[in-house]
Image 1: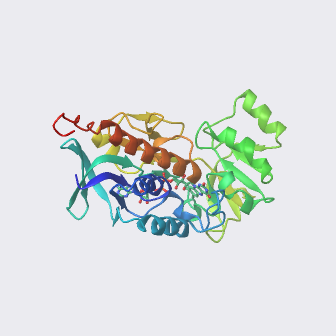
Image 2: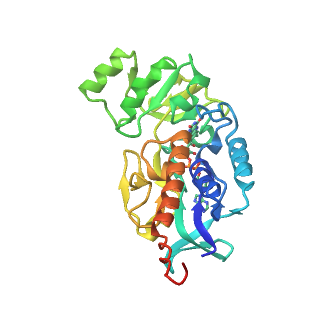
Image 3: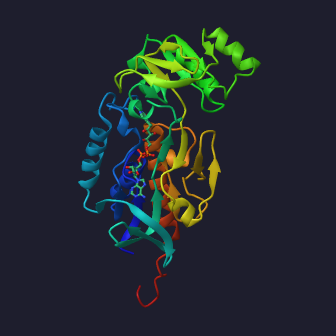
Length: 310
Ligand SMILES: Cc1cc2nc3c(=O)[nH]c(=O)nc-3n(C[C@H](O)[C@H](O)[C@H](O)COP(=O)(O)OP(=O)(O)OC[C@H]3O[C@@H](n4cnc5c(N)ncnc54)[C@H](O)[C@@H]3O)c2cc1C
């Protein structure tokens, strides 16, 4: 096999996985299409040692550090298909080339599907946000909204008052139950049952939202939990079991980040229902170590020394 491992996805999870192979002086190929999930945000937050740095700058640094190791190769492009071959894996690139390795790490991330309301997409990552820990500080002390999109939204609304005065828009879809309503009241969250139909202001800034009855409510930012999808179909093609999380599917892995297909590991947003860059990176480290250790474990023991040789 030309490589010990192919890592598909060269962001927080994938680069962290590949680094373990580099440190072990093993041959690893990273294939990356260059579209990290947080590319819509001007800066990443809460990531150890990197707070406030643009996402692509963080990844450029990490990629440069990884490529300093002589056993690492990088292809900028898309892995189109993956299959089992010759006891390992074959990955076809968009350019038509095929690469082979003994192990495969899927660190391909997820894709966010925002509620279909005019004005959401162009504000994504700036004033339309999914994570208050990531970007709440920057919009703090202003009028904030939570747009219900999943049953988790009421939980999200209970958090947001720590960043600013909060209105929970049920959108006519997710009405809080009695316990949730009591918690929202205790946290000072206002509940609005007339749905948001449009976001207003000079995007990506947000000034207000228009409701279905024509009222305009001033807001500086809206939090929502997008529906998520796995980026691409490699996991399904390989036969990995995929589980359903609260907002979308994720690849099932064990405590070494091995999927249900032996030799295929997965890490990052693609392989856990609760996500951020730190957790993706940590899972990438585990996937890299797990994949590396599985190679060592299957290595044939050396032939016993014969009397002649002695
Ligand atoms: C708007 C926004 C802002 C965020 N801000 C923060 C923040 O401030 N702090 C924080 O901790 N978290 C933040 N997050 C979450 C964070 O972005 C993710 O948890 C993190 O990016 C997950 O890392 P990952 O490596 O699993 O996947 P990603 O970063 O999504 O990377 C996946 C990589 O795989 C590549 N890829 C996918 N399929 C293929 C293929 N077939 N072939 C080749 N390459 C492929 C993609 O192009 C991409 O480069 C934010 C998320 C969003 C949506």
